[in-house]
Length: 232
Image (cartoon, rainbow, N blue to C red):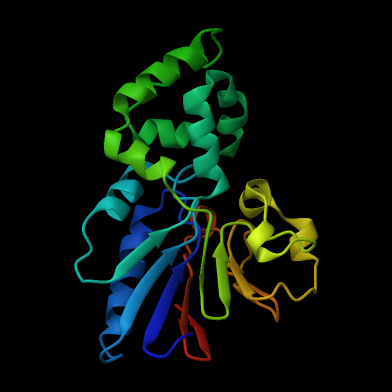
């Protein structure tokens, strides 16, 4: 990392507002002993679905930071599916398999009879009326990646056969095996989530900080400063 900069990168949250607020307290306590530095929080996407409070997580991410820290929120594949549903109610068939019903419920959408033919359209209309404009603007404007120093941050990973400047949106949001199995030098160390593990993975070419928060109760933060790498 450039001198004087400390990055706090936070993995997939999936509606676990309780873990997010607890992690924030840990980060603030950790930063209190750091002296005069620039602090940046990088969230790696997947704020919605599976967990119980997607709306609360988005509310928190949109709330003013208590400090002058910079906050960067990247897009995950779950945010992408949510946006697809807003364009096409039939996406519900896929989205519900990814925990979309939990997100709808957190926004106060009445799920009713999901077996009726008009259920997807009815749920979409209810969701549109329940989704705050600020939330839609937030979800629609999330970047797919950001880079600092020797690190490239994105949700899922990168395609080994492409340069970092030539990645496809689909890979940044969805890729798994081709990226996870690769030992290639990607040009920078890729910090990612998307593929949950019981413990964070620290490898020569990538760092995975998705520890399945919605299921395990464990949210992970990677702290980067200079050549130092550690976890909260």
